[in-house]
Image 1 (cartoon, rainbow over the protein chains, first blue to last red):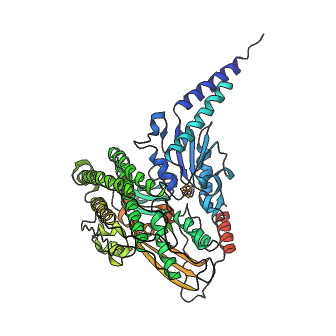
Image 2: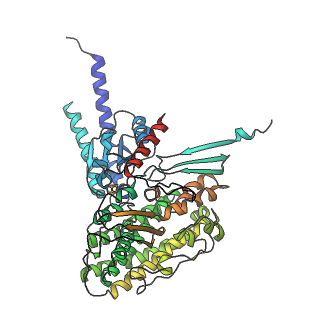
Image 3: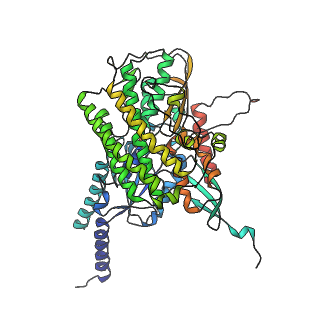
Length: 157
Length: 398
Ligand code: SF4
C-alpha cells in the first residue's frame, strides 16, 4: 500500500489553515457606493454593545491581511475597478459577505445611471445579509453563519 | 551635497479604500518630510446618479430614494424634500406633524454628532472616547428605533405629514434617555476641553479664520466654529422652530478644538428643544392628503442638517413625477476648506483635519457640469448620462 505523503501533508495543512481562520478571521470593509447607513452599522458592531471582537474577529485596513471582505452598497462605475482590486489583493482562501439590500440587489439605486448593479455581478459572494441597513446583530449573525459553514466544510473534508 | 528640490517631494496617495474613513475617497498629499505642502482630493466613488433617478420616479417613491442619499442624516433629507413638495402642492401640514418632524430631526442630530465625536476621537488615536461615545449613542438609537421602527432610515415622514405619533410611554423613555445623555455630554465637553493629550492634537491645529470660512462657503458647525453666524434653524425657521427655537452656538477660535466644542455644545441645544417639544406637543392631525400630481411650479427648501445647510431645488411639471430635483449637501461646501487647511501641518494631523469637517461622502458625490452663460442651455437626458458614464470609464480603463 502506498501512502501519498504529499497529499496527506497538504490536507493536514488545509485543515490547520481553516481551523486557524475560523477562529480568528480578519475583516476588511469596502464601500462601493452605499449610502453610509450600512457602513455605520458595521462600525457599530465593533462598539461595546455588540462587540464583534469577542468572536476573535478584527476589522482592519489592509486587503492583504484580510480573510473576509465585507461589501456594502451597489457597485458604481467608478468603484467597480477598486472593488475588484481589493478582492484580488486578498490572499486565498477568501470570502465575501454582502451587507444590505443594495449589495444584494442594488436596492433603491437600481437603474441609476452610474450604478452597474450588485456585488455578485462583480465578485463572488459567500453570504448575504439583508436589511436596509441590517441591524448590527444581523451582520454579526451573517459573519458567524459564514464561519459555521466553513467549520462544517472542514469536518466533511 | 546639493539639495534637489524634486527629490524632496513625495506624493502620498491614500484611498479610496483606507482604514481611516468608512467611505471611499482618494487623497494625494504632497509632503516635504513630515510636513504637508499640498493636498488634492478626488471624490465621486459613490456617485450613483440620484438626482437624475428622481425624474423617473413618482413624488412618493422619491421620498424613499432621497432618504437614502445619506445614511447618517436620512431624516433631514426626507424633511427638506417634504417641505419643498408640500410648498409646491400648496399643502399646509398640521402643527403636530411639524413638531414631531422637528423632534426626530433633533434626535438625529444627537446621533450624528455623537457618531462624529467617536470617529474624530478614533482618528486622534483616542479609542476610549470612541467606544464611550458610541456606547452612549446606542441610547438615542434605541429611542429612534422605538419611535419609528428603524435604526437608520426612519421613514418618519410622508408627504403631507408624518406616520408616527408620540405617546406618553414614549415621552417618558425619550426624556429618560435625554437626561442620561445630557449627563454624559457634560463629561464629553470636559474631556475635549481638558484632556491634555487630546487638546494637544486639537488646539491651534487647522485654524480657519472667519474670512477663510466665508470665502470657501463653509457651512454648519464647521463655519460656526470660525465665528460665522449662520444657522438655518434661526435665520429662516422651518418646521416648528419658531415655537421651539434653538440658540446659535458659536466659537471664534476656528481650530479643531473649536469644532469639537461647538458640536458638543450643540447637543445641549438639541436636548433643550426635545424637552420643549415633548412638553408642549401640539394636538391634532398627523397628516393631510397629498395630491398625486403637482401643477407646474418651482421652489427651494433649506434646512439645517447636522453638518450644515442642506438645500433642495424642486421643479414640478404637472405630472406625478418631478421635472428636476437639485440637492446641495453641506459636506461638499465644507470639503473645499480641507486642501487649504492641510498645508503646513504634519501628515499625522490629516485624518483629524479631514474628520474635523465631519465629511460624508455619500452625500458629496454628485455630478456638476459647468455651463458658461454664453452657451445655449442644454438638457441631459437619462440616456445621455448613461452613455456619458459608460464612455468616461471606458476611456479611463485604457
Ligand atoms: S441597504 Fe440601505 S442602508 Fe445599506 S447602503 Fe443600501 S440604502 Fe443604504
